Amino acid sequence: MLRYLGRFRGFSRDAKLFLLSATISSVSYSVVWLMLNFYLESLGHGQAFIGWINALPALTTVLVGVPIGILSDRFSRKWALVTGAALSAAAATGIVIWTDPLPLILFTSLWGIGGAILGANGAPFMAKHSNSPQQRTALFSAQAALTTGTGFLGSLLGGYFPELFAGWFGGSSRTVLPLQLTLGAVALLQTMGVFPLLFVHRKGRLAEKPPSSLESIAASMAEPPTAVPLPSKRRWELEHPALFVKLLLPAMLIGLGAGQTMPFLNLFVTGKFGISFAELGWLFAVSALVTALGILLQPALADRLGKVRSVVAVQWLSLPFLVMLGFAPFFPLVALSLLIRGMLMNMANPVYMAFCMEQLPERERATFTGAYEVVWNLGWATGAAFSGWWRDLVGFEVGFNTNFALMAILYSLGTLSVYAFFGRKREAHRVEPHVTQDL
Image (cartoon, rainbow, N blue to C red; front, side, top):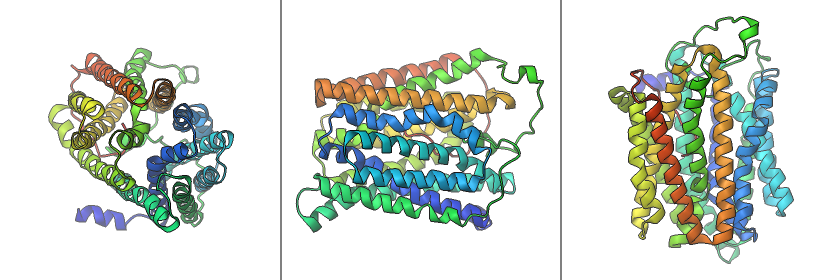
């Protein structure tokens, strides 16, 4: 820990400014993720519309992710990050001020665009502003740790603010005004996250394409590999297209399953058990800490079992807790299941990403990461849109029962496909902790 803190003190000024901005943005995102669905409900919007709102950021990433990545490589990383943070702040402000369906759709899409810009440029910025593989590992780990820590803080604030504002202005915390003020505070905080980036030194656009966000996982494990020039006529051909399909299929299945319930866990828990926003905030705050513990444990598990078997093991162990989460009649069982299931599934994903990087030649990794983002986000968006539409059609209880059953089936198929395709493969590379999508 002392060695790690020493490396943290050794981060460049620009890296520290980036971490400050990312921390502020992560707090804002955690509050929005916890409270947005309740805000939309208070405005009188139905479950189908809420489902589409949750699907839009992922769908936007699918549509604009590749063009944003290409354009980002042509401009300064500093101003790309400023643009992404500013668009996110503008979107958060617009969601608070304009409450009709069309403006909400437009500003939610704008939020997705801002997030896509930040996602495309964050990892390359950190890679550019670290001077050694050890410092790069420390910088990426610091970003991951801060993201997890702010998930804890953001969940507490998100649960506390509506009740605070309701106490000040009267009425229930579930009415429009307290929730609107909560998201307004988030919009102000998101705007503050732009300012640290304005003080970053501009170093000009990059001459070469930097590593993508998922390639940075592999970069954190070893020296960045030297690019090998390829004949132009084979530049876009895949060496093993069947391997691509096998690596992407589990992501598609699990992304589709996660979209069924993950964006709506807040609605499910409060709707089924009637807990307060403050209690909900504590539940998700503790979940963030438990997930962080799992991420810290996953390298040792991968060392002992190998990456594939460790992925299959924790995903398979999560399934009983997923069923308990969806169908247990008592809140303590549901809360325990939420904590353990989330920890186990989020342990698996970084290990699987590192395994995918190891299976592919250097020249195909960027192509794979782009395809993975498209497949994952498309699955998530499809699942979220279907989930909202289905619950609007059949009601809360039947809708969520169906969603959890589908999620369990899709997770099972995704886990089985990993084992069927790669279960006999031997590998023993160590994995560094890394925070990824919420599963």
